[in-house]
Length: 394
Ligand SMILES: Cc1ncc(COP(=O)(O)O)c(C=O)c1O
Image 1 (cartoon, protein in one colour):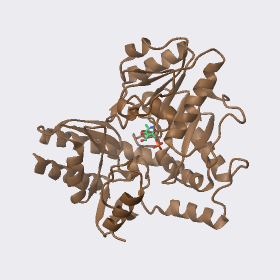
Image 2 (image 1 turned 90 degrees about the horizontal axis):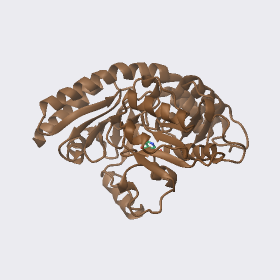
Image 3 (image 1 turned 180 degrees about the vertical axis):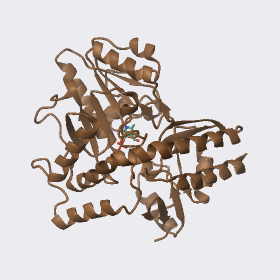
């Protein structure tokens, strides 16, 4: 089947909840994807910040083949499996955390965090969750409620009760909302879907202090910005501020569905047997790939720190060159964006024609989230295509 046949099949059989581009991906090697008609694209989307090691990684292939050879892709959580326990141990070592709950997605990781927060607070009558405008935490009811963007709530009322929204990077707005009823504060240290907006150090330090003084849990959602994407294994490590709960997903499963809710210090031991579960959580195949991704995380993070700074300089140059279309470039490591004066989709479509996959964040930001193995030469090629596309739109 070619692109068009697949697109038509999708349109005829899918619900209409996505607005998809009219191509179907067939294969990949390194950071290049090939569609069903044989056209190649340099990939600066990475399955939306998922495919850290790019495509066709030999270690991932070996790990997955070993699992397939064993005959057991899944065991349930009635039993242990060697891959999931090793992945949990590696995560705790890398993050400095105490315990891990595995699930299947970012939304699920945040659901676990919200339930932990409510359980933690339940003994003292605390139930309120403080979240932020422009945040994004996923599409399940709890996760979408703490997502501080009206467009994701429209038509789905009533949302989860006892959730309030403060302004990101404005600690005074948080002070106005926290009280002895606050169970948790949930925040992305680097907002992704809201438009690639990094938290300031003072802001996160202020949240840490407020959470401590009100005995609330501080939850960092690093589903998108965690796992090497910002040039350190975890984004919070740039700030030197430790959360009580860290949520992860996307890159952790090497392309298979996986999420993790990670507890530090006072968040340890909140869940008792029966409190929470996921049939596929810590699935054998996903965990085997997580082991591969986590074993490479320190080295990948170092690479992203250097290559990400290079990408940042290149994007600043693009903004200076096209002031009629660009407002500013911002972000960290390999999670960057250019705020545009035109809808990002016009640029994205031009880039696709020219063989570059790139995506947007919010309504105005062109987002750069390549696989973590992208090189300076890949960056040069991608930025040249964006440059050319912007020139044609001027
Ligand atoms: C910060 C953040 N949290 C949560 C999610 C939801 O993750 P998932 O789509 O795996 O449920 C996303 C997805 O983009 C995200 O960026």
